[in-house]
Image (cartoon, rainbow, N blue to C red; front, side, top):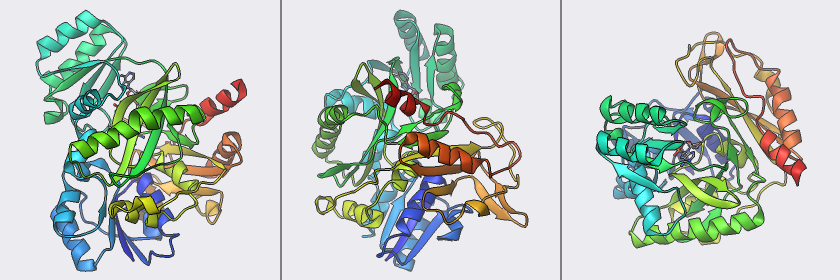
Length: 427
Ligand code: AMP
Ligand code: GLY
């Protein structure tokens, strides 16, 4: 079978790596891919937003399954375009992708189907939003409605800060039309976790749990990023909490999607805040998390191709997923300055010594190759992902490997996994 993976991050490298292990997969294409992906797949230079060209390529090359990594092509309707041409694709259609593409849509959906989430109001007017913030006080959360590359959410600790965020979104239009509507939301206190399920719209299978680390510095300090590391499993999600999430969040979501006649064959990712043992949805994503996919897919024993193909065909009831007992930790290495501006083209050394290990994968994100070898080409550069008998040993394994890697300005958090380790000790 021929597979096309769309995207260029660590998540896509993990997807391609796992798909390459399938007996059914003969050839993998990836567009645009990165330097690590190009070692196991043929990388193309079709733009991820050029839906017409992607459909044509899938038709011309006879691709059996296309898998969409990032959210933007999904919200732009890539699945609808493929389905119209009778091409098999994994991901929700345009309407389903609104769960991520519009925070207003997601909040209204949650309200309609009784899914626990923070109290909120939607505004189009700066003055009305400002009045509401002054009434509610801080801390408070301000969110641009549309996609803003992870930068459209502001957890404001003071009224002034929240009004600054409001100005940035509505008046300065920092996110363009993504800021036509703004959500002002109650600030929830607790611990975050990521809960992903694979669905064909009828059956749903939870993936291994995971936890992301959003901020750039240790101890959850500094600005939010796309994710600085993740581990799996997330011990905060106990068996009883998982049952609660399935009953009160996932089932109502699936039911709601069916009621709204939304064709959802993909991943539903619920970003949760666990407050006093109760799960609340902060956001939905309509695709695998990045970097959560890296440790989660490291732990997957089953054939990923079979699972994603079955989901795309509405046959997920035939699939069972099995997971390694090992834990996994992924530490993201970034360019100096990320999530702000950063330089590219720094030579990456040490990767050869970490090849061919069953317990370790260095997933590439912002990398390319030039005459000096691997060089940096993005903010998030590599995701060093290790297995271990528990989170502590997976963490040690990942950080030992990082000692062998070097590029100028390399930055990473030193505390990935610590929350899970502390929780285990408490128990
Ligand atoms: P989102 O893109 O909606 O996941 O928001 C990005 C990050 O902002 C989340 O991972 C949380 O850390 C934080 N956040 C979002 N909504 C809230 C909320 N209602 N209360 C507290 N923190 C939040
Ligand atoms: N790691 C968070 C995300 O993928 O959106």
